[in-house]
Length: 294
Image (spheres, helix red, strand yellow):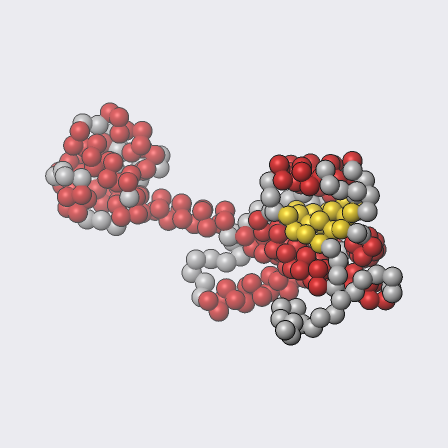
């Protein structure tokens, strides 16, 4: 058994979890107190931890020695180091490495602004304008337009839906589950358009909606961040936003900027077509959100 001051070879918290079952009742209380709040244990004094576990300081020291540490200070340091690693790992898995926990608000603002600017520049280079124009032409002439996106995918579609409705397009945003969308599929005809936005391109519910809508004769349109994905290939018309789907929040943020760019482009192109064609319904009732006069 090691009695060095260096940490044991295995992570301290893992060693504790594995040892709990073999400890005597008093030492087990100490281990459970550490595992219940590793952040506190990584900075607590030996007396504070002992009091929390209703044990003696000597018991805390013996537990540390049993785990392969020279004493409680060495075990506490190992727990604190592991806490830091876990926190950093969780941050990077969620937010990514572009922003760090220590960045100031000004730094975060600069990074986000730069990320959005790069995303828009890259998106412009990657968007197929011919495909967008084709989609706009379909939406402009559709009798009904059904739009579907879940969670963050619904953000850009929500504004697009409201703006289409404002100029007289019969448009509905759907965020319901598979049962609701299946029922929707039964109402579709060849005069309808179904627009989905799915960054990952792999959502099973979205793929099923596209398949059922095509079966009913509706024109299906996919806006996505994953070329070659099931959502991309499952639609009649497909628009890549120019930014690929990512795995961390900063990638997600970039993708959302490109989603908004594409849906805004679609809205303007549809509005152009409907305002220039006297056979199409076009309503201009002032700024979006303004209340009509009584």
